[in-house]
Length: 231
Ligand code: ADP
Image (spheres, rainbow, N blue to C red):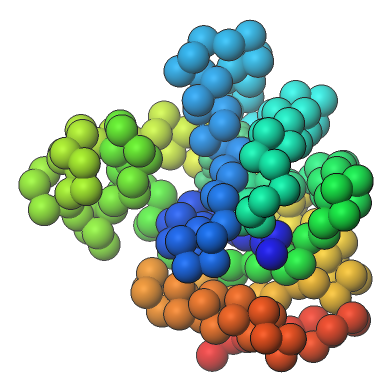
């Protein structure tokens, strides 16, 4: 099974992708994490991409597409993937289809986690990550048990530089003007599912579990259906 999670910054893609990867044996592939790894390793691509990421802009397709596609290739075809943050442009969506077609796979489901703008702003403004594994916390909604310390691995917490200031606003604008257009691409292929991402993490996770289980059992409508699962 190869799944996409689409959503605005703060919609919960990373959190849900991580949770889903275990029961369905999927590899979680986050384009944002691939860029952050490239920064840490001081690669040439990392240096070029950083200025875009810091400003909240999309990294150009010429850099993003090869980075993500090569990563998927390197994982091999044994496991499916849950993609988080890729594709964000039509060119990326087409490149992904081409790559999957080459290895006789396909995007099975594109799941849009729809969250209201007010909720997104609240979530991003208090979001913290752990230094070791990028586990996600929130100062109000999901605080760590010990301040500034990851519950799971004890590493210290940090706020992403692009979660503050103008970059936050820019990322939202880009999502709602550009990335939102890829919903149509998947809607036309009958692969788009829309879930209400405003709810709590566990509730969204339960909806995702039942969607993926229904897909696996062949109970989701096939071609041409646009299934909206709003409560
Ligand atoms: P979020 O979904 O919260 O914005 P990500 O960690 O997915 O965060 O992405 C962080 C940044 O990395 C984006 O703002 C953008 O600069 C860059 N990025 C990630 N994925 C892509 C992509 N598919 N295309 C272009 N740029 C990307």
